[in-house]
Length: 164
Image 1: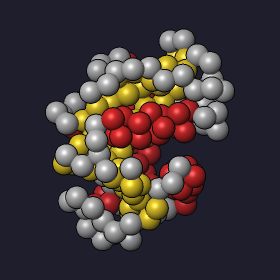
Image 2: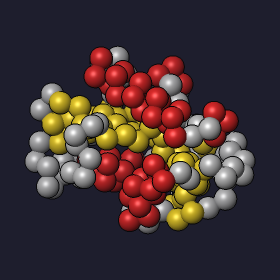
Image 3: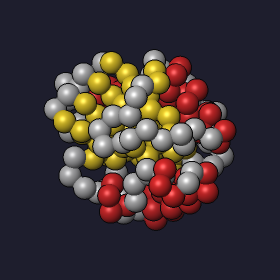
């Protein structure tokens, strides 16, 4: 696992570091994330991980900070030796549209490549609420794909993948 810091060119103080998921700010951000996922996806179609699940082996979780302020987060889950999944991508309120999610996504893609993964995939919602996320992933080369891993066809989910 890499724990290097990434500097985003347009955000000179942005640091992306491995997070142990114990700080109150990250706990609050993830609670908000889960609440919004529940509010915008039917129960059986909501695949966001809680704190306990995000701490499981095989998942690396990063936070993006500027000075001491939490701006966003994201995680990489190893599915097998060649395939990873993006989980828990979230930008904190007040920081959307500032390049935080793009910097986190580039960081996770770079880590997946460093691990030797040949494919990086994700699941996001199909509701209008999720369109900004879908656009972000599309801008970074992800394409819609069939369900992967343990996912099944679901009209409330969009599956995307990127060949590395």
